[in-house]
Image (spheres, rainbow, N blue to C red):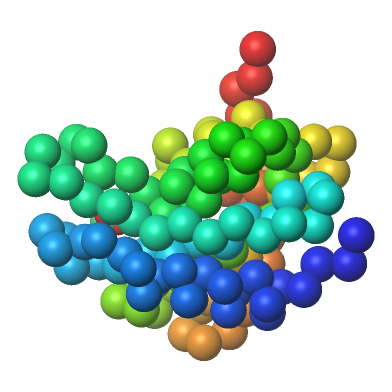
Length: 129
Ligand code: THU
């Protein structure tokens, strides 16, 4: 499938506006593309009990999975509070769980420039049972 990287990044940017991040003041948005062409958005959601915080990427992925989707093609990540925002280690492993035959593309923005990498760039030798 032809992936519209810019559209996905635009959706991640829109999602970052819903970020609930009063503690870190670091807003993050994510958008995931599933193998059937659907896009799901997510944002980071913090909590007074800090450990309960969920990242934007996992928020978006879990929305897709809870909707019955099992295969991701791409994940875009954006923060308005940083020149670039790369996925944390936990989110990399969660992406890996829902990778199908085709490697997941990870879209980030580096000082305004789209940067596209495969998940294996961020997580070589991911774990799967
Ligand atoms: N955060 C994400 O949403 N995604 C990441 O990949 C890294 C971190 C959030 C979690 C927390 O709300 C804030 O960024 C600061 O760590």
